Length: 295
Image (tube, rainbow, N blue to C red; front, side, top):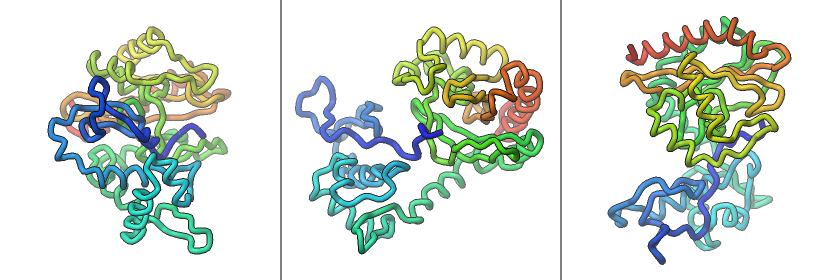
């Protein structure tokens, strides 16, 4: 699944708040796709040095595994002087490694500390391994635990298929929520206004020739999720595959994550999934939800 991204795109080099000519970047909170998230009422609280450091770290990814300073500057949108200072600092702190021959940098294993801290603090990730392993052993198919982040779902952990079927989905990868089984499984049980807000912010670009991108079609799919309790997609995110998404609810009754099965379409058409895989997956989702305090 080459479209998955273990990083976010860097901010544009000169993003300014709409309607306020000349207003600084620190006046508003943005994500790394340049999407406005929230107004920052006190500009003094925004630390530009930290923001530059995050830009540099987010410059690296599957397609940019090692970079020199000039390439980091282009990818991050920072000027060369700022890039040199940030890269030097991150290298001294141990978050970047430098090849002394090629003078190229790449993230070090210390970056994994942040992922470990997240997994330890995140309730679904820390409390669900037993249930997750049980459903994997019962089905033998590829299964992942995903969470919604903005307009995307993030792969938190995954267990591969015990058969020859293989799909390149790794922890940290991100996929559009609007066309993935887990994204729709979560959106289907969010408050309607919240789900529509996510869809409105989504770019809704097709990943395959089968991706449903129109809002009416997506909302019909979300209605089916509410009726059945799960979501099945056919070749919408990855050609030649079907996918099953089942939501996991927290103590407040809202979806906090979802489990997703990616399956070969030739062996697992929609009808077989609904008949054979959806029932045990739903039961696993209910058990996981109860473990998190859902009723």
